[in-house]
Amino acid sequence: MSTTPDAASLAAAPAKSKPYKITIGQGLALLVNPSGSKQWRFRYRFGGVAKSLSMGPFPAVPLEQAIQARDEARAMLKAGTDPSAARKAGREANMPQRQRANTFRLVLSQENALTIETPRQVLRLTPEQTAAVRAFLLAADPESNGHAPD
Image 1: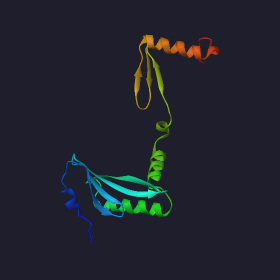
Image 2: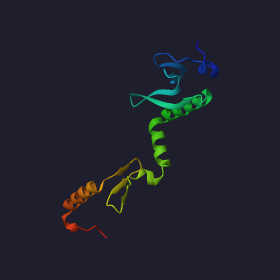
Image 3: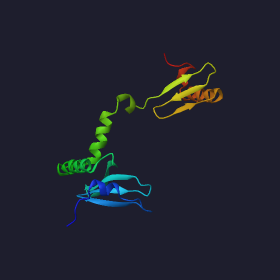
């Protein structure tokens, strides 16, 4: 009969040249990476497909909390819900509307240089590149008569 390792033995688990797992039970394991970092993983099957769910880093997520998260995920599986899909849906529901939208901001400088800002990046165009984009947009919409909509 195997016993569940305690927090002290998990903390003392050494890094090796390859990642390895310390099995806790019922799909929960601690993945020990060569860098020494340790991650909780819950392996399960949903719809005939093997999946893995991260439960967070050790020791930030202690053993007791990882077991509780595993038990909650198993309860979801028993109810017919994919824990990974439920987590993703929860993240999207908590994300502010502005971040979910594909928004961008255009800023035209006095030197006719265009800056395009998205939530993930900023693109700065030279005046020559700005002129090329403007020409392209005007050619794409011949009804604009060279003017932006009011």
